[in-house]
Image 1 (cartoon, rainbow, N blue to C red):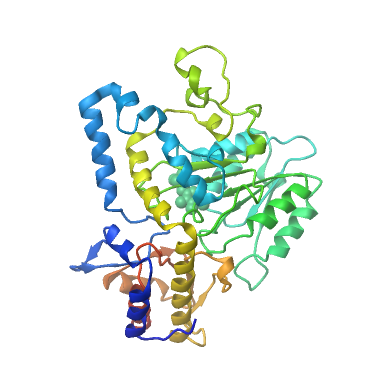
Image 2 (image 1 turned 30 degrees about the horizontal axis):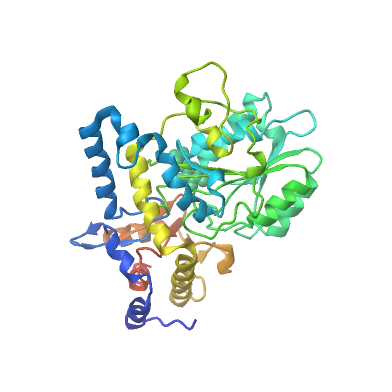
Length: 421
Ligand SMILES: *Cc1c(COP(=O)(O)O)cnc(C)c1O
């Protein structure tokens, strides 16, 4: 598409946007008495207007029915996680039996690592991207230590080449095959939280399998942002949170995927009663029998209140569908990328460290500020109504989200950035 650096052009794109009505489905935070330019959906997605109704319905059922809500609520609490399965399966490209909403992201990562990282003398190494989200680093290192392994002896962290800002897929695949003999697990982000790079899940998974290792992904920044095909790509496991692009509210219930080839219930795991065979769950008998599929990894009864918010948001994703979202997302982020080039053509002030190729990124662009003034520029933007995200030491992350951001948002952001430089 041929873009133009003008407000009227941005507004024309908004008028033609087939998803434009969805902005009205969200509460846009107000700054200085005006709707903010909210570019932080990669950190906390906005509140859908319908979320309140979903929550009130559960509060009402609880008030009216008490414990009977488990069976007689309008969405019976006992089976609540089932209601999330279809929309989640669609979002990540899986079968309903392969996905479940449960716990929190880091908890789910630990649950999956406990099952899928079982090192022996020969195979014990883990490959990840260097600079992974802190919680993921802590989870992996602590799992290694639980097995009596020093992280330095087993953790292979891949960095971009000198002078480059993101990993080349060919380098990732090479590293995996180089470690083939000792490799137990490849664990990557889906979209890297810092650089915004969308990794090639299919290529990484098949390289891991060729090396005799498992492949798992943390999709915190990928789910609801980029198209995923976990089943077809033969990913072994994946985990995600729901409060970023999935707009399900702060600390809301997270999710997990386990490929159906691991579904038979024989894999060792941390167990709890909600993973026990559903029909017999309330017999409270000795002897855990895992539900088939990922449901067998559930521990606790479902968190209905955050789950209600999750359902409200998933309903929107089901209405819109990832293909339409992705189409707009590529245009919207493409427009941001075009404007960033326009403002600073020589790259004097900043470098965009996210891949240029739309198929290797989601909606986020990470802007590396070249001078010491980065934080001052960011603060100036904040004062003028931009809500974005600052990552020490020098990166501004901006994520125009196709469900609620507009081309006008992107143009106004770019204009304010140019003025702040
Ligand atoms: C947001 C995020 C987290 C946060 O973990 P919680 O358990 O939800 O607090 C962890 N890892 C990644 C990659 C993230 O993007």
